[in-house]
Length: 313
Image (cartoon, rainbow, N blue to C red; front, side, top):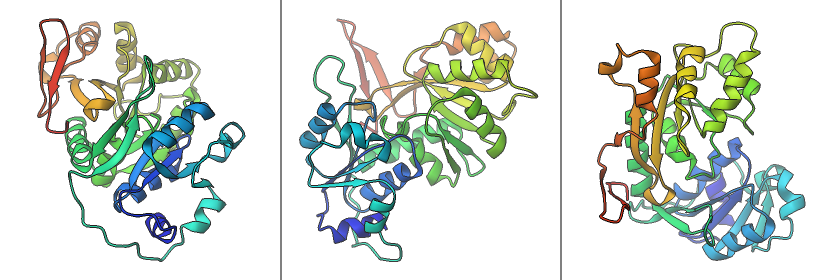
């Protein structure tokens, strides 16, 4: 429906379509409804101000901006050819039952443009090809064991490197998506209990929120023995990792990557030879960035720069 609606708006193949939104089901529709039909998706950080969003819209050449209604007050002055509020306004332009124009997939064509955080200068737009996204999703999904029994909770912002590729990996394997709008410890535990969630990704702040909520949780901790949590962004303290595995009973997995590397570079997941380790010993091992992911070659240059070559870069 979205692809057909973009056809009706006169957007050519390769046209840029941006979206600024909290996590929402429509964000999943956006990721697939743009790049799967020849357009280029530009997910934008919902925490940015109007000037920053305007820069990304202009720099990417976006012709359409889809916007979360809650952000209109702050971002209503952003100028773009077509600006639509997610909901009734956008749905009215994306009619059901209309076939989109055919598009012949090209693995080397741009699928999304993902902007870096811009900590030292203006955000940089990283062009992800269909090959980038496919291989990252395949490797990430393979090494985390994604399958059709998985229920994935979107605690990680989908704008962040397309949710690290998990939306593609989970969908490809036939898993189930549960979307949460913001990180809230008690709500995360409630969703895990309600939907049988088995997998989530996030920064260390997600762990802290869950551990705090678990201290006041009435009854068995949801997900004990079945949950795995993938963490990146910063290495959590060893004691925090140990608490995840002992107090929550969840499997802790740590990864490292960059938007520019599409993004996965390394993964650290508990190994069979660690089974006899104490929880503290295993947590110390898991506090490291891990080994290069499948297909990744890494080295350190003479001046200390980390060098990486992968199939998905």
